[in-house]
Image 1 (cartoon, rainbow, N blue to C red):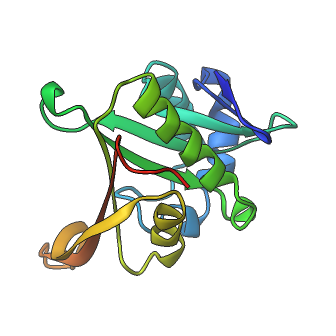
Image 2 (cartoon, rainbow, N blue to C red; image 1 turned 45 degrees about the horizontal axis):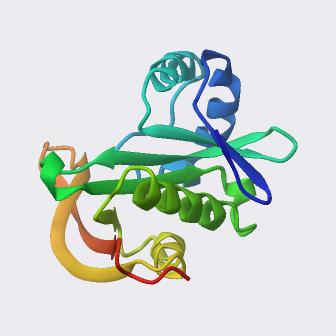
Length: 176
């Protein structure tokens, strides 16, 4: 568990299912994710899985309300010391700086505790709030990949492609 001035970042618990449903059950929350809106029953399984998955970190406000999550997972061979970061918050919590505060803290932990050399992130260029957050926390855009990802299909089964921005920050980069 880690705390920041306004947040507690902790492991998920199986009892978090209702709170997970509260922030994932908005079309805006999952618009740019590779999954759709879960049902309330799905969130029971999600909470149980995340309780045993260190890649997912619960973001809780000072009052204990679970408002979203940060995802941090190894990327590539261990010798590369590279990690991928991502985040999802309920739309009612956007614009309050919670995501930036949580991502900054997870980046700090990645470099100081996990000895990361590089942390990367990817996002859809249409997701302006996300790429602005990445830039705000000191990550640099390294690529604009054309038709690089697909999370949906046309009725005939062919992929619906979208572009992807690729961001990174190195252990030697200054932190804002």
